Structure formats: C-alpha cells, structure tokens
Length: 296
Image 1 (tube, rainbow, N blue to C red):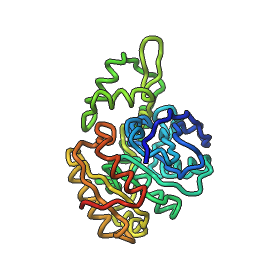
Image 2 (image 1 turned 30 degrees about the vertical axis):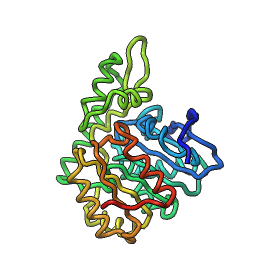
Image 3 (image 1 turned 90 degrees about the vertical axis):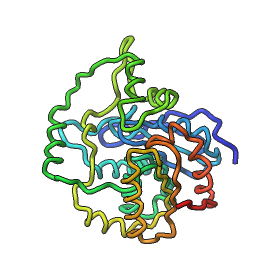
C-alpha cells in the first residue's frame, strides 16, 4: 500500500460548547480512521506518522477540547473524563460516521477504549499507543479537591513566550523528551501568535489529568465488556513502562475476548509515535489490513 502523500484539509466540527478542530487526510469514500492525541498535545502529534501510513484510508486527526484549535469545555466546572469520551460520540456524529477505526496515544487511547465499551461496535479496531486503561484514583478526596482548586484558579490571562522558549518547553518539560522535529510538529497547533510572541492553546485545568471517579473494581466491570480488536504498543523507554505492563495484564485477564488483543513492544519513549513514527507505522498498517502478528 502506498504511503500518505496529500496535504491535510483543516476541518471544524460543531459541539454544544463550540467546535472541535482537526485535520482530514484522504477521500471520504475510503475506510475511516479517527486519530486522537494525548493530554496537552494536539492533532499535529501525528503529522509525522501520517506520512508513513497507507493512503487507502480516510484519517481525521482531532484536537481534543481545550487543545490546539478546539474550544475548551465551559469555564467554572471541573474537567470530567467521560466528557472527553462523549466528545468522541459527538465527533463521529458530526462526521456522519456510523463506525470507524481508531488510533489513540496516551489519554486519547484511554478515552477510545472506554468509548468502545460504552458505545459497542462503533469502533471497528483500536490502536492504543502507550496507554490502554485508566488507573483508579488513589486518595480520592485530595484528587477531587485538586480538581476544584485547579478550576478555581483558571484565568483568561496569558503569559506570552518566544518560539524558542515554547520549543524548549515542548521538548523537555514533559515526562519524556521530544526530538526537535517532533516538537516543531506540535508547535503548529500548540500556540496562537500575538505580535512577535505566542500564547499556548491549552486549557489550564488540564494540569490535573481527568480520570474516572470510581474504583478499579467498577472499572473492571466495564473492561470485562471490552471486545474490540486492539493493537497495544508498549514503549520500552517510556516513563509508563511498568504501568503499561500492568494495564496489559489487566486487559488480558479481564477483556471479553483476549484473542482480539495484540501487543507490540517498541523501542522509544512515551512519544515514540512522534519521535520515531517509522517504528510503529508497519505494525499499524498490518493491523489495519488484518495481517498483524503480536509479539508479546
């Protein structure tokens, strides 16, 4: 299959609080794939991977609410994990997609898995890059207090930065570093220019990552309903490596159909899809085509 060549088309999709922005690749007549980034990233986190994926699909890469060019959720309320899950439903409805395949990284992978449980059969296949399920919250009361404290400190005022300062932040002020070309890809949607400087396009409430506010026992009841074919990438250099291995074991022990779970270890850190997309692209292509062999 030939690789992606064409330039993407910018799209905006209406949602009750504003818009979800994104980029569309390929013909609307082709098989459909929704692509969703991780927290504090944006749709351009997949620019480099898109260049290596087969063009015989229609890809839509979105900015989640409060990221990139998408509207934030309404001010004055805490961010809710399942509002992001519901966003996927709104996006698919706006695209008029009854079903599609799904590629997600980190937080984007997690919301895809929960979406597929709540809305069964809408996702035909899932590619989960270095994340699969959400851990239960330890210390629930302090976590909820932090959510509300973060929300109460939310202000519209923005600090402006030079491009060099933002690239440096995108590269190094995260759990795992980004290569320069990977940071440059994110930069395109991460900021808005104000004069000669830039402000971030991000919801400050995301400093406290939204998680499901129920116990792991409750989550396991959901996971036991999971039966969507899924390809899970474990990045061996990721800060999440131990967590990922635990999560994969939970999925293998509890999912409704274990035969539909494929696991591929890859060399790289948490952002391997952006840093080294060539390490993932062949496996994703095989998975989309139904020819993948798990390496677990």
